[in-house]
Length: 112
Image (cartoon, rainbow, N blue to C red; front, side):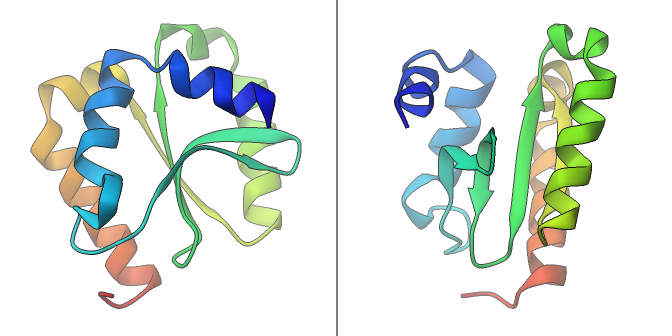
């Protein structure tokens, strides 16, 4: 729990922007949590009802593909869908990223 608190204080500008858009049910009424522990991992954003995880990855993840792959396998094995975006992808194509997130949510769960 301490680690997730610390990560909330150290969010990247991209994570802060996405959190602004997702928080307080602003995103089509869907409720998200940020820096949420799931098993041994902490995910960037999660919609619990839809069992959807949104990950925003920076350059450091290019060298951690194996670790990220294990994380994703763990999440899938535990009933979660994972969607990953690169920080620069979110920055340059915000609307498209939000559209993908909405489509995933609608597939997993009807609008709240």
